[in-house]
Amino acid sequence: MEILNMTDVRKIPLEDFFKKPEKAMVKISPSGQYLSWMEPWERRLNVHVKNVETGEVKRVTNATERDLYGYFWANDERIIYAMDDGGDENTRIYGVNYDGSNPLEFTPYKNVKCDIVD
Image (cartoon, rainbow, N blue to C red):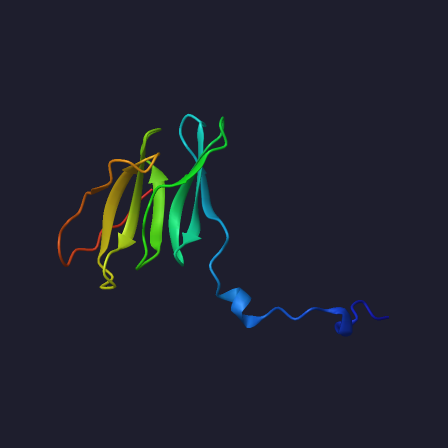
């Protein structure tokens, strides 16, 4: 009894296992007014925010050299994220408002690795 005919199985290209996801790390803001996720922009994972009521989507980070490592909602106005800002594996912590305004680096120190602990 044949369960699976191997000639009908599609081979998955090797590249598919290593490409960036279309969307990753989906999160909801504390009030539920915004939906956020990481999505490639300029070949790097960046945070995008959608206003659930209006449907407007805005990219709020501008990483082009390295992917963001992760992010979280600090409150309904502010997103905190981590990124290696030079390829030296010394992660820095940044913040930005839900609309992309008021970007701020919280850890502008050399040779320091910071991490987000949830």
